[in-house]
Length: 293
Image 1 (cartoon, rainbow, N blue to C red):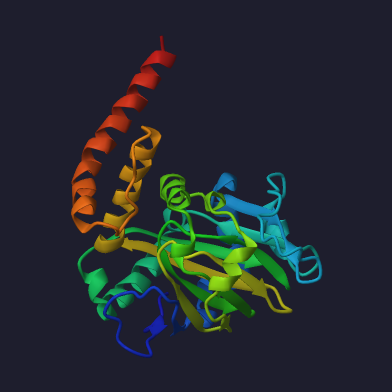
Image 2 (image 1 turned 90 degrees about the horizontal axis):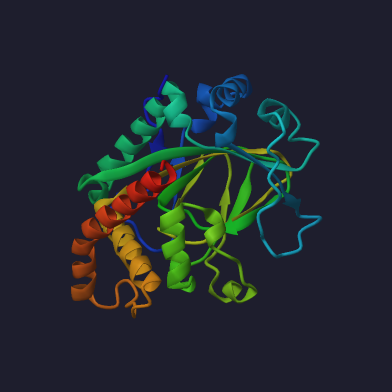
């Protein structure tokens, strides 16, 4: 089912930069993104793993870029079928867990990336893929992802607005990596001063979204299908662990040195991560024991 080449590279990637860049993809012709196959996926993935939200459009945009109300009682197949008439934003989580074909596709995609990126050749972790289905003119909320990723445009077109991760407070990044919740990152109008050049995605275009870099999206005049592939490398996983140790220090009221401020301190925090993980596991087990008494 996988095409001979899923990705078209304009140049060889050595390591991932702090700015987005575009590559190409062959996904618009892939059978996994045909409407009937998407409906089959929506029937397969557990309902709680399909996020359906109201969404603002260009005509109703208040420029606050917040997440719309979640619609937990809406049938996913029906919501997908009504994207033309009802402004809706859909996100399918864990497709690679519940659908073997999507698991094969994301692994093939990451394998191609690895062939062109030295940073990925040192190890890849937390591989996942997320399917976005959204109505025409949708104004997608401001958010950050808890990993680095490639956003692949399959159907329709959109403009992606990205910001450097350094605009975010360290505490926001720490909460993001702990919770994996995009809601951990809030939008402020002053961020617009740091806006990177916008990126237009047409079918067959992909954009790299840097680690923790905030972004928002505005669709053009047709519904969109986009597929995001996220992962951590050894380098980004190290940073994640340092942020989690910083979060623990912050909880204890101790002074926190931001990530990348002092390399020696960061190395010590990286080594301390295992102890933090053991402590948190013991606390969870003790809490479970108390509830069972």
